[in-house]
Amino acid sequence: MSPRPIEDVLRELAPQVLGVLVRRYGQFDAAEDAVQEALLAAATQWPQDGVPDHPKSWLVTVAGRRIVDDFRSESARRAREENAALLAGAEPGPVPERDDTLTLLFLCCHPSLSPPSQLALTLRAVGGLTTAEIAAAFLVPEATMAQRISRAKQKIRTSGAGFALPPPDERADRLRVVRQVLYLVFNEGYTTSGGPDLQRTDLTAEAIRLTRMLLRLVPDDPETRGLLALMLLTDARRPARSDARGALIPLDEQDRSRWNAVQIAEGVALVSATLGRGPVGPYQLQAAIAALHDEAPTADATDWPQILALYEVLERVSPGPIVTLNKAVAVGMVRGPLAGLAVLADLEGDERMAGNHRVEAVRGHLLERAGDRAAAHAAYLTAAAMTTSVPEQRYLTLRAALTSSEHVSGDHDGMMGS
Image (cartoon, helix red, strand yellow):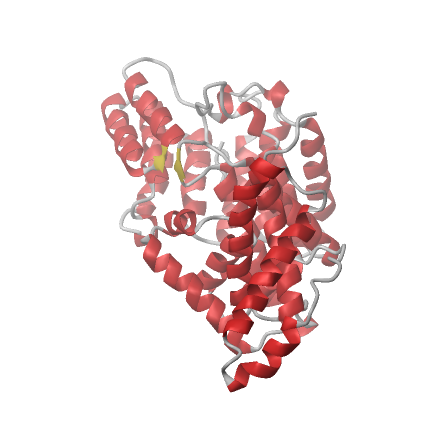
C-alpha cells in the first residue's frame, strides 16, 4: 500500500495539534498561528526528510516552540514576565492520545461569537479550509473573511473561554451550531464552491468522522443521528457522480451498482431507528429523502410522491429558500414541470438566493422537461456563468448544448446535490 500523501496527513492532524496546544497554553489565536507555521515547516521538510515516526508529536513540538518563542519575545513586558518564564522552562511533554478536535469544535462555536464567525472559524480551525475557500463559500472578499476570522480568535481570547466541553445548560444551543458547521463542511467537500474539482473527499471524510464523534457524545440526540445518516446516504453516491475525467453525472444517470451499499445500509438503519421516535428536525427529514433516493433500484422507481410529502413537512419544520428550491424539483416530478416552475417563482426577488446558480439550473431543468428548450438553454447558460465550480460549469454548458435534442436532464435529489 502506497503511503498517504503528506497533505492528507497534515490536514488530518492540524485540528488535533491545535486542540493539544489550546489545552496546554490556553490561547487560541497564538496556538492557531503556531500550528500554521508548523504545518508550513512540515510541508517543506517532510518531502525531503520523510514523514517522522510520530508526526503529531513533531507538529506539537514545533508549534509549541513557536508559542514559547512568542512569549519570550514579549518577556520584557512586566505583565508577560512571569508567564514567559514558566513557559520557557516547559518541555513539550508527551502528546496525549485523546483527540481534542471535538472540544475545539465546541470552542469555535462559543456563544460570544456571531453565527457567521462561528462558522468561519470552525471551517478554518477544524475543517481545514483556507481563508480563500471560506470567503468563496460566504461570497465575500478574502480580506473581509481574514478580518472576520482574526476578530473571532481575538474574541475567544478576551472571553476567557476555557478549553472544555460546554456545560449542560449551554450544550443544546452550541450543539445546534456544531451540527450546522459540520453540515457546511460536508457540503463544501461534496460539491466544492469553486475550482477544478467537483468534490474534496478529505472534507467529507472529516465531517463524517467528527459527526460520529459528536454522536458518541450525545448518542440520544435525534438530529445528530439524522445528520450522520444524511452524510452517509449522500456520500454513498460519490463513486458514481463523476466519470474518469471528473465530469458530473446527474443522479438519474448514475450507475447505482457503484453506490456504497455499506454506507447506505448504515444510513437507512439510522433513519429507521430515529425518525418518528422523537422531535422531528430538518436533518432527519433530509436523511429520509436521501434514503428514498438510495433505496430506489432505478431512477424511474424513485418514490417522488413520498419525497414531495417529506419536503412539505421540511418546509413547515425548517422553511427557507433552499427547501423551496428542492421542493420545486419534487413538485415538477409529481405534478409536472409547470407546477414546479410555479413553486420556483416563489423565489423571485429573494435576496438570499441572489447569485445562487442552482435557481437557474433548476429552472433550466424544469423548462427542458416542459419542452421550452430555448428558455432552458438560456437558463442553463446563466447558471453556468454564475457558478465558480468548473465541473458544474461544464455540466451546465453541456445541458445548454443538448437542449435542442429530445434528451431530458436528470433529477436533483435534495440539499446536497447529485
